[in-house]
Amino acid sequence: MSASEDRYLVVVNHEEQYSIWFADRELPAGWRPVGEAGTKQECLARIESVWTDLTPLSVRMSLSAPAAKGLPR
Image (cartoon, rainbow, N blue to C red; front, side, top):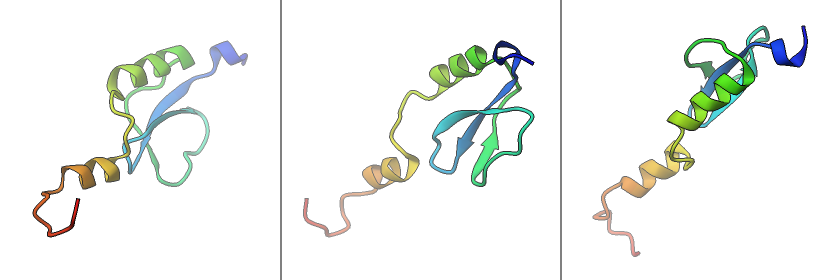
């Protein structure tokens, strides 16, 4: 199978960061598939359409926490 025929998965981790992974390989720890397998370009296009905020989830959560925690700003 050539690189142009490889099938990929869109994967996401606990920080809501996206990547692609070969569909026929075991996923690395901490990543889960989202959606169907596709070509590299299809998967990259899908990521571009859904991953609009590159900030990791933990940072987004800390920024949205109430400011009334008594911590100086």
